[in-house]
Image 1 (spheres, rainbow, N blue to C red):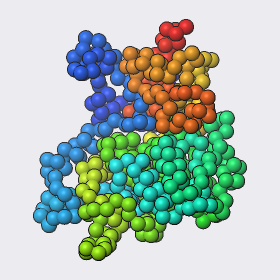
Image 2 (image 1 turned 90 degrees about the horizontal axis):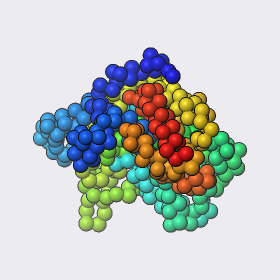
Image 3 (image 1 turned 90 degrees about the vertical axis):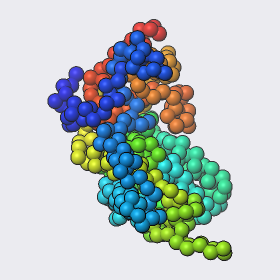
Image 4 (image 1 turned 135 degrees about the vertical axis):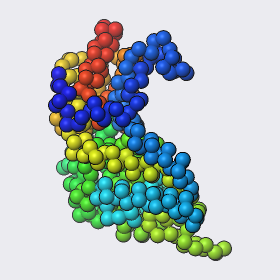
Length: 425
């Protein structure tokens, strides 16, 4: 067992900013905190789905609604000006966080899925056709796999999948075979939300660019957990979500190289994204606003700014080190049991999550028992149904970690799994 002092982050200090972690669970859902069985401390290990939100981020939302709630870019009164400055500053903050050249390359959406769909519809419908190929991986999230699958059906393009080997790594020899002169787009998840595999996205970008293809990086599990620089990995597009990195729900980011976004037509039309309108035609606003039709995600964007400030204060290198420590610890503790199968690479070479199954126990049943112990995890196919088919299992149990988790919580997970083992013995 590892001591608190070995954590790269002062977890105790961090946890003070998350009141929800003080909850006890197990009683009446309709009256939380009042049930007689509300005796289990919450152990929140479902961070790959959604992270919790610290006080400073919540306060930034309250400050907006209490202090300067107004629409942006549409008024010359004081509140509108103040909201516009804060909203634009949020774009600048995101650009700085991921190494983009400026706000022109940062489009706010409502989540990673919408960011993927924006590119697939705005770029894909216009550019793809018979003979073109979109190259994905076998470990793609449905947000990527289903979107490109359906766009290919509409355009006559084809979809190919880079193999995942038995150890959970991408087969890069196979990638080099698939990415050829027919490839128009390579879309790859940076960190698998099931396997924990960290894809070599910079190498994949090189393969794509050698064939004059674009690369789209799904950063939903990477941007929140490690330093990501879009210039270093040479991504043409990158997408991620605020709610997986301490921010609120309803805010996502699409990064795109400026010259590409300039050439792409919008796929949502309406107010805010217009420069001029006549009865015959319309022209579009400058980047990034031409892709943000209607009233945008103002409060959420401002809160994402606060979330990034919070993470930067900790340091993304330390966030990554902490996640990797927890993932390795969980992997080692769970592999001590010979009736547990863990999916993906070894514990010292993965993102901050562990998906596993206990022999003879369905993942949903195991999740229910863990819930009885106050341990919140995710069970199911994690929006990677084809990958689970490849693994030969209908579902898996996934524990995922973040900055406020401790090794003692993994001990609680392991103890609960052991109780389930004995229950089903």
